[in-house]
Length: 170
View 1 (cartoon, helix red, strand yellow):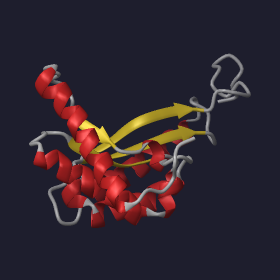
View 2 (cartoon, rainbow, N blue to C red):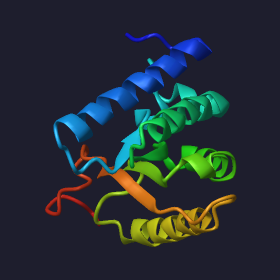
View 3 (tube, rainbow, N blue to C red):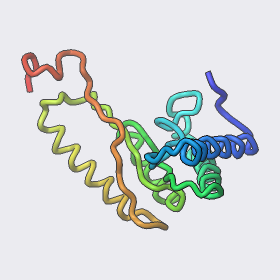
View 4 (cartoon, rainbow, N blue to C red):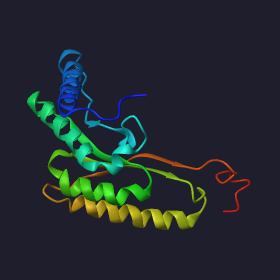
C-alpha cells in the first residue's frame, strides 16, 4: 500500500514527475489525445476516499500539477473532484467550484446506483433532477468560465436480480 501523506516538497516533485512523463508522451512519442489528467480516483491516496476529508490537501496536489503543466506548456486540463456517491458530491463540488475553479478544467463525478434497479423509472426522474442541479453548479462556477460536468464512471448494482428484466419486479 502506498504512503498516505507526503511533505510539500515531495508533492512538488511528484507533480514535476507527472508533467515530465506527460511531456515525454506528447513531445517524444507524439501522443495527441491526452485531454485531461485526474490526480486521484475517487479522492483516494493510499486509502479509498481519504482526501474527501482533506480537500485543502487535494487542492494542493492540483496546484502543483497545474503549475508543472503550465511550466511545460502542456495543454492538459485537470479534472476534479472525481467523487463517487451522491453523498460526496455536494461538499466536493462546492469546494472545487469555489476554491479550485481557476486550476480545474472540468468537473468529474462517479455514480454507482445501489438503491434502485435499472428498470426502476423513479430513479431516472431523481437522476435527471440531480444531474440538472450539479450541471447548473458547474455552469455557475465561481472565479472562472463555466465547467463541464463529466460522469466518468456509472453503474447499477447487479446482485439480487435487480437488473434482470425477467426476474425484476420493475
